Image (cartoon, rainbow, N blue to C red; front, side, top):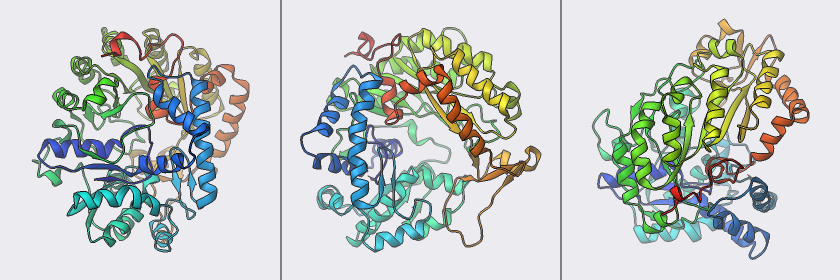
Length: 506
C-alpha cells in the first residue's frame, strides 16, 4: 500500500495506516510505504548539515515537547528549504501541500504535465519506491489518496507503477468524499484507473455492516518511518461518522455512526514495535467528534495503552457530565479540539449546531483548568452573519484567551452536497455551479448572499481584528503554522500538563 506525496511528515498517513492495520488483522499483508515522508526527507537531506538538519534534530529530539517559539523557528528553516524546492521545480511545496503549476483541481491537466515528465518524483521512485517493488514483487499496489495535496503524486505514482507492469487500485477518503458529497468523481477514474470506494471492507471480504477498524494489528511497513515528531503519533478512532449528525452544512450526514470497540486499540498497541512503545507514543483520535459515552468506555483502554491522546470533542453540556474530563486528564488526555465556531447563539441554532456559547466557554475553561490543552475552531462568514455577530465571536475569544491555547480561524465554505445547499434559497444563498465541460473536482461551491461573496468582507474584518485584539493575537502567537494536527498536543504551554508527566512515561 502506497501513500503518495504529500501529507504531513509528522505522523503516519491515517487512512493508509489503519487500512493496512485492518487488513493485517484479517490475514492480508498490505505493506505500507509512506512516499510522502520519503519525499520530504529527500529534500531536507540534500541540505546536509546546517540549519535544516538542526531543525529536524530539535523537532524529533525534544521528547518533552517544545515551546511555540522554538517550534516556529525550527519549522521556519524547513519551510525555507521547501521554498527553494518550489523555485527549483515550479511545484509549490509546503509542509502540508504540493501544488503543480496547473493547480490541484483539474485531474486531466495534472495528468498532462505528468505525461510531459514535469513531475518532481523520479528521484523519489528510484531511491524509495522501486527498491520496495523489487523486493516485495506485489501483484497489485493499493494507492491511498486522503487529501487533494496527494492527487498529483497519486496520478504520477500510478503511471510509474503501471509502467512496471503492476496493477494498481486507488482509494481513500478524497475519492469517497468526491463521490458522496462533491463534484468530479468521474474524472478520477480517467486518471487513476481502477478505483476502490468505501472503507476497504471489500478488499478483505468483510460482512456488510462490519466495521473494518474493529480488528487491528500493527501494520507492516517498508521504507523509513522516522517521522518529524518527538514522539510517535498513532492514528486511531473510537467511532466513525458523527454522533450529533444534525448540522445543516455537514457533508457527511449520510455516513453511519459506528462505535469502534476498545479492544481494537488494545490489540493495535499490544502489537506495536518495541521502539514505538519505548518512545512514548501519542494517540491521535480521528473521530469527527468524540461521543462522551464512547470516550468514557474507551478511557480504560487508553490508560492501559500508556500513551497520551488527543482528539475532537463537541463543547456541549455532554462533555461536562460527571467527572468525564477529570478522568480523561488522568488517562492521558493532552489536548481536546473544540468546534466553538461562533458566539452568536441565534446563528448556531439556525444551523442546528447544538452548541451554546456560554456552555462552550465553560467547557473550554474547565478543560484548560485540568491541564488539557485546548484547540478551538472558529468559523466566520456563515450565511446571515453580520458585523455584530463577528464582533461577538471575537469578544468570546478575548474573554477566554487565557484558556484557549490554540485557535483555527477559518472562513465558511459551502459543501457541494449538504442540507444547507439543498435549502439554499431559504437562507438567501446563491450557489455558483460549475459550467458544462468544467472537469475540475471540488468539495465546495462558491456562493453569494445579497449578491456578494461574504468572504471578502470577512477577510477585511479578520485582518483588522488581528491587529486590534490583544487576546486574539496572544492565541494566534501560540498557534503554529505547521504540523498542527501532530504537534500541538506536545507543545509546552504554561498551566498545561507536560508530556513528560509521569503518567506519560513508561
